[in-house]
Amino acid sequence: MKFKNKQTIEIDRELSELDTFAIDFIKILHQHSPYVIISGYVAILLGRARASEDIDILIPKCDFSTFTRFYHDLKTSGFYCLNAEEDADVYDYLEEGLAIRFAKKDTVIPNIELKWAKNTLDDLSLKHTINVKVQNETLCISHLELQIAFKEKILQSPKDMDDAQHIREVAKEYLDIALIQKYKEMLHGFY
Amino acid sequence: MGFIEENEQERKRFVHQWAEYVRTHTDKVWSHQQNVIINSSMQSAHMTREQFFKMKRETHYIK
Image (cartoon, rainbow over all chains, first blue to last red; front, side, top):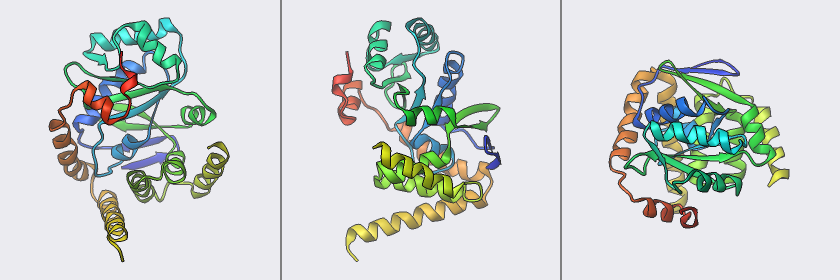
């Protein structure tokens, strides 16, 4: 794992089924919208020894026609939405601020949990991203400092604390510890 | 030390040891090990859409 600079990590890893699933989805998504991968899959991509049934992704708000083009491309590539089928119904969930989930046809796990950025913290995640290069593909993840701060300060479950510890240790020569603290203070006022 | 504290320490020790393994081995080596966990978990994960949303407490998210 090479931390090339603040915006790029290279991982010469063997792909898991979860990685392949994420890459297949991202190949379609990035043609239609900016995005950022957040939460558990970030730690897993960086080597954490656990699986996950879903991958969390944030996108900025988009209009209905952009969404329908994206949803159409997903369906033609073998994905379906677990929440609803009709374009308008799926879009309604996003407008209500809820997450929508996509899996490959005839499966439920793994799935993508996709939601619109709805607050300044989500906007921050979308703005400060890192490109992770794996097997000639690029996945865009949130700043590691923000992920650690959010898991340690807000989520705090054993799984999230372990994810944060893993990221802290594998990226220890790269992380800006003062920035983690700054994000924690920001989160304290936010939640 | 109680069971919960002991369990937590054991978990943290494992996370530390595994992170050290990731740091000191090539990506190909650690990811091969990691994929045993991930791929077996994916292959054994059979659930209906309804069961999944119930597990996630998102039953009102389905139409």
